[in-house]
Length: 102
Image (cartoon, rainbow, N blue to C red):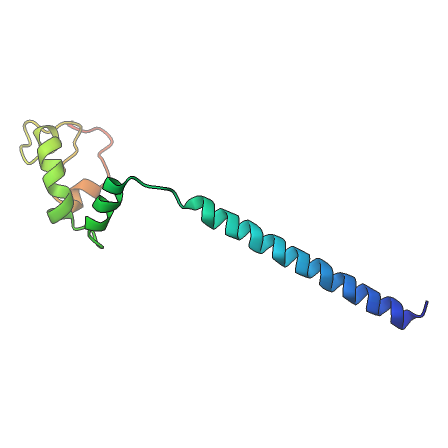
């Protein structure tokens, strides 16, 4: 067999392996994308549609924190626990003190 013929065979096999590799990759990507879809209950889908595109601390987060957290982490320094104040975004995301309350 001539060298030219051997090179042609190698090119064909290389092309076949590349196509098989590409097809395998596309197959697994397609499987991953399909498996990521989940059937969500209708009420979850309805609530997701109502979510804002951008979350605003004062509008979306602060009312929840006010109802659930302000009794221990609100504006009253005397009743604040663990040195954690949640009345503003800045204080909520600030680093905690090493020794809160001291």
